[in-house]
Length: 124
Image (cartoon, rainbow, N blue to C red; front, side):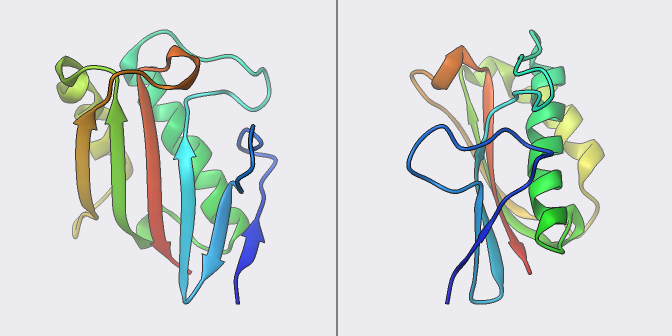
């Protein structure tokens, strides 16, 4: 059985999807744009955007009774691969060994012209 997870600490879904779904012992967090849920605004630089995306994912995981320490896989979408280094610096501040599995790649464009979007899968 699947359960919808919602958190006021992250931006609400802007389409026909959930912030996250809990199913089969895992939490599947939809891609998080770097939108501040309190203001609706997005920081300008990649480091601040990475931190905001991870803070959004963290809030959703905590609403599900989990946390970043239980992340097993992440996917990082970047507007350009030149942003990988600074994104990775901030990303490294949020995770400890053993680090989650991860893929990172550039896409043509992200919603709202974001520089980064991060999707997470974690243990419930």
